[in-house]
Image (cartoon, rainbow, N blue to C red; front, side, top):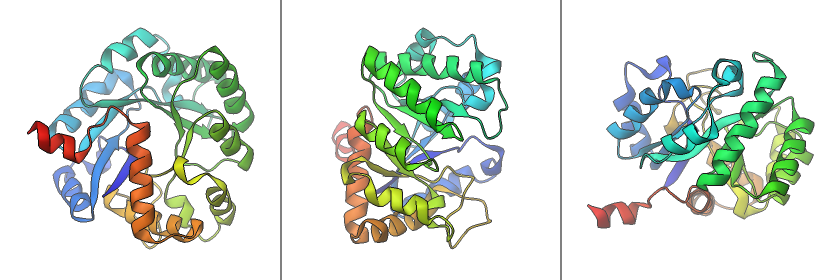
Length: 266
């Protein structure tokens, strides 16, 4: 079983065929999907999608692009919302200096609020980092000194040093379809250096469809292509990388029930 650790099933791109997309993922061997929150004030929409599909779970949080809109979101509110049985992560939160859609001070404030919620709940923080390596690393180091918290650097496209610092602090690194792009040898080199027990795969659907679907709308079923390239990158076969990334996923997303647990509960 593969896991898509990061997708956005609530986005309008999927509105007309969400059930079919989940079914295609299931047929492709993707047994779990985490649909990621970008606005706490729209969390009910995310929650309803997760409740409607056995394979789908969710996070709760505010994307850095929307940080200025939701400065009133507190760690306590995130903790409260995270008690829902389908919520298995906090975020996505972090820093994005590529677009700078929100003031950097607002992004940093939101990032630290989400870290506090991850620390209190023990749920992994989904970190968005783009063109902000130094500041993301500095906040991670500073906040870890206050107390550790689980996290993943999602859709990794940053520099080698941020990956190294993330791993040193106990974090995981997740690779998307970017890993498959012909001009992404630097990302493959970084992936090859990440310890095998810290690797995850994702789609970030509907964005960043992997080769051979590049340029099309991405969907969770396509995570199989990213996993195959990751297998080649780290020198293992597809079966090994499937087991490896799935085991890593359940270790980090510890609230997520494993398939055998769901069967027993049923």
